[in-house]
Image: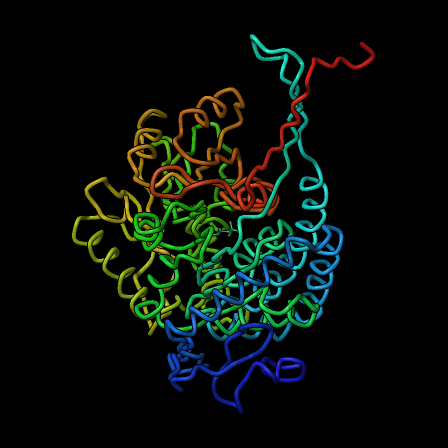
Length: 498
Ligand code: G3H
């Protein structure tokens, strides 16, 4: 079955524009306006989505608010049951959804299918975790605090926040949407989803799987449109009780403008890979390829700078070069390793970083080559701190190597970054690895492996400009609730068996 056909036919208006989802129905924007989604490979319009107005956003917010009231009274086991159903439907329709990922974000075909399957698993795990942790509260007694008798019993429980605004990024429009939707729903919240333009159609297909699972009307809503028209309006909307955002600098602007509501932000990184003299260089090279070049480097957790000890740098660079030469470059449909980057402006930005490094004397391990949005993988050796590529994230298949003379120099470079998402260190000495991990100012340090968010139940968090709060299934559920307490006051102290 192809995207937009079979069970997905109702999300498409004729054969032209995909509809938005409000109050359990697929709708067209009243203005008749739409937004084009350009295929990164063909650079032609692939899909169109509705350009929703602020008025339509207001209506969506109203529906989300009223649906949440009833959902909060829906038994936890029932919420979990519906999530399991949605997960199964999502996995059943992995191919049409993966087709959208290939066409609108140029994700390699196999990785696109993996993203959908991973998302189904994430939703099921969330349902199970929610049943376990949301069914538990705390019971405290007052006589543990100085000056108190045992006259107060305090009962705590976890209650929903209300309406969660979920904004996923282009690189995982399905997986990083369900990582917000699942926790929000199991915790009793309703959802307004604003997909990225590039990735919107994949998101709409995913939302239809939740529709088919039979969630109540208005509980999940998905608006599409121009960020310039509805972006600020959504993030500053008084009806929003929590924002979960993954993306770039926009997140910093959102954090400054948002009201007094919980924020979960994941905003990119400049993940460093520190390589010590005793590292297994074949293992390092394999991880640099996986960490630096998978999905053409368009991952917040990609290795974005290699900090190699001078004594092993020559040998490491040779090993990485040999592996780069084996990467398959071309269209995502052919499941190539390196595919076109998401937009022409991204390709231009990457090219700017490459040219800056060239002017400043970096060593090009391959010739720089670009056709349209397709950029050939490039390893830049002898990068120095005065080059932009030493600090900025290319979000493309270009990886700088900085040679270091001491571990301290590597840690210093890592910590001087304004990002602090993940990092990795390669050494056979676990004691050194632990010391380096503790010294690195990042949310996670991987020892002897490339950075990665998954498995999806692991905590995932960034320091500094890399984010606010921690994700991962358990942490996201806990972030999307508040604690409510009821205190029973007794007329006289009561001691069990007393
Ligand atoms: O792009 C940001 C994602 O959170 C990275 O996820 O490590 O699974 O590729 P990943």
